[in-house]
Amino acid sequence: MSIIKLDDCEHAIHASNANLANSRLEDVRLAESTVEQVTFEGSTFKEVYFDQSRFDRVSFAGVQITNGVYSGMSIDGIDVQELMTVYRRVVVAA
Image (tube, rainbow, N blue to C red; front, side, top):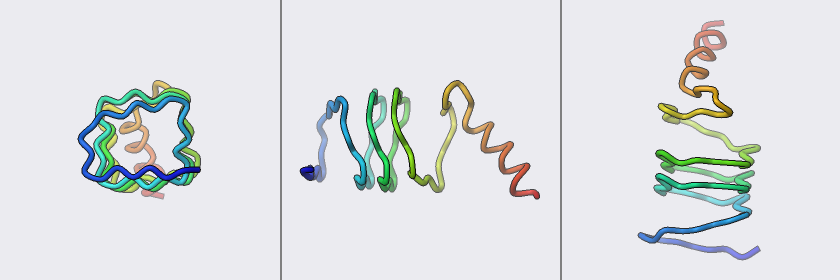
């Protein structure tokens, strides 16, 4: 596997059927992206923004999210912000 480094990049990127496993994304804005058939397994995201993006057939196995903003995010039609609110009410309160 080759390593691609993009520092101070201001260009649009098109990736199709991409394996991004074990990638490190830091201070990256991927707003309004469309992502299909991509693997992010084992990746580290720090200050990454996916505003108004769409993911289809994407594996996030093993990905950990901290301090996430879930406003407007849905997974398989389920509102993530609502899901997290219920989770915190039930699990954290227990």
